Image (cartoon, rainbow, N blue to C red):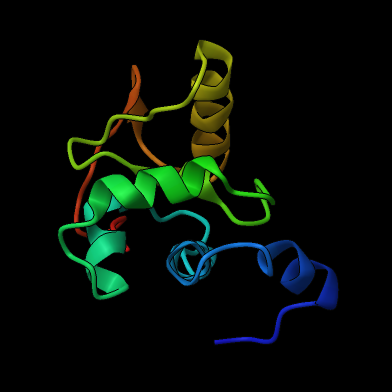
Length: 113
């Protein structure tokens, strides 16, 4: 793990322990990799809480510093609140070198985190 700047810590201070654990797990996903809501849930020790992971990411106070665009559905689908948000996330993933076809990341073990 790494030390976070004070301004980031302040932004996370109003979050629940669960939300902070989700956001911190997502912060660890390196550029060029993706994870899934289910994998994040397992990583934080709550394997059945994948929907709650999505809800926590919906409240992300620091996108793209906390790179929620790197979290996709288990089938690779890129999701967002609006079509513009989906297109923006898709653009970021393509810029990071990830294989995207339509609205899906082509998942493989080499890109999954």
